[in-house]
Amino acid sequence: MNVKILKELPVISKWCLVCSVLLTVALWIFALLRLPVIGNGDITPLHYNVYLGIDEIGSWKTLLWIPALASAALLVNAWLSIKERIRMPIVSTTLSAASFAISILAAAGIFFALVIN
Image 1 (cartoon, one colour):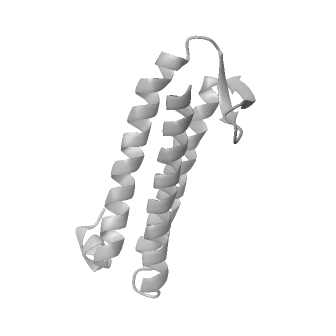
Image 2 (cartoon, helix red, strand yellow; image 1 turned 180 degrees about the horizontal axis):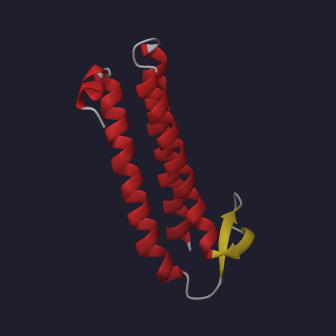
């Protein structure tokens, strides 16, 4: 990627994108290291209700959709943020912040799904 493009991004956008990338990488590492531990059998709890009762049971591989969707959202938002940095800097910053928010929510989701199990 061209370094000049990254220099043109607002500072907050750079920080949000860097934090999103780091959090998404950590999310993948945590999920891939933790899933084999809980994935002894093919079935694992996928969702809990308010009372911590199990709502949905399925394959542990289904939990990999959380980091996959967070990664896809990060790629799309980063691409759009860099593309729109000149014409619409507010949209660029908003997309970067949205990537960071999605990464935080995905990290919380996978953390609680794997730790509660």
